[in-house]
Image (tube, rainbow, N blue to C red):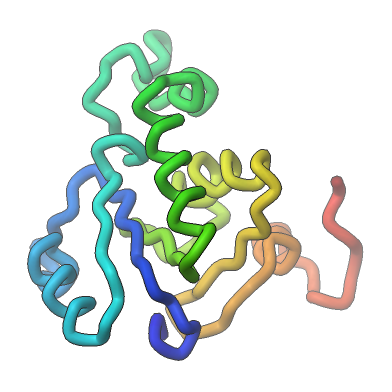
Length: 152
């Protein structure tokens, strides 16, 4: 899918870049696989991951990550700047463990910050489709692609 989409750089934003179920996605295995197909691997899960080690990034009431707080952290901003630098010269894919962008920090946190920078975000789905934000939104609310426009 990455080759078909002409991806040159994959940025991994998983807080924990390991999997018991899909060992090919473990950080070093994935790096080697990507190298073999001339795709650069960059790990930014320590700055852009959905489960930060910084306890101040969590809502004390719910125990969940507070995306607004996290977006204000310098380490998060540094990670976003690194993606923006890569986007100047490369076709970039941001990866995490969740396939569905409508419920994933990759979209709701990282891509949202990129949108604020004027970046158009597309989503590569598990079946190979490439979707716009509007198509993801329509799918998540259960309307067909020819109905309604994204409420902006």
